[in-house]
Length: 71
Image 1 (cartoon, rainbow, N blue to C red):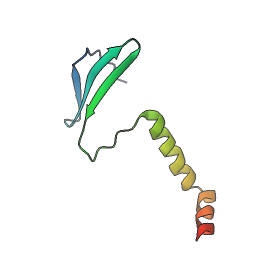
Image 2 (spheres, one colour):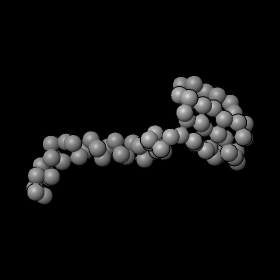
Image 3 (cartoon, helix red, strand yellow):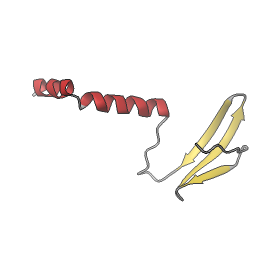
Image 4 (cartoon, rainbow, N blue to C red):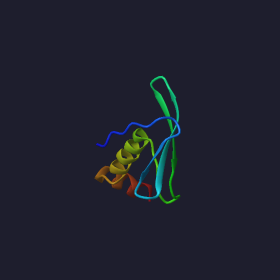
């Protein structure tokens, strides 16, 4: 993991097309802004993990059986 120090208003660039800017620092919270092309999905990690879990469950044998029962 790369750890960087940034101040309010400062940015970093990932892969030449994603820019992350520190918008506000308030106590232990940091508000960031992300500029990226529309085709780049951006998720909070807890949402991403939930999506991955749901995809895994849907592709399981039980998920396939449930789908067959619907048809």
